[in-house]
Length: 76
Image (cartoon, one colour):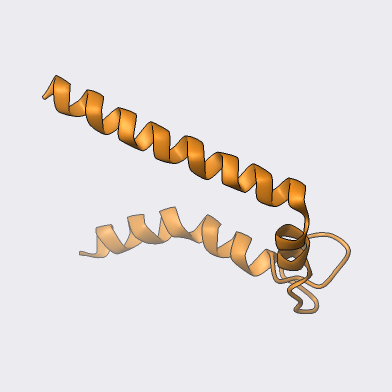
């Protein structure tokens, strides 16, 4: 059980660091953040180039998921 917890921590720790860094209020991402702000999220959601790129990534991900499920089912 301890091994599983250690592996999960090892896999999740980088994501937790990125989430904490994304709430920094400085002019660039920093860890640990000196101040807290949601400016990076505001920048992401109000910039059409970022939201378009995210939408494209989601579309490609959904298409790949369906295709890999279909191919995997045929291979089984």
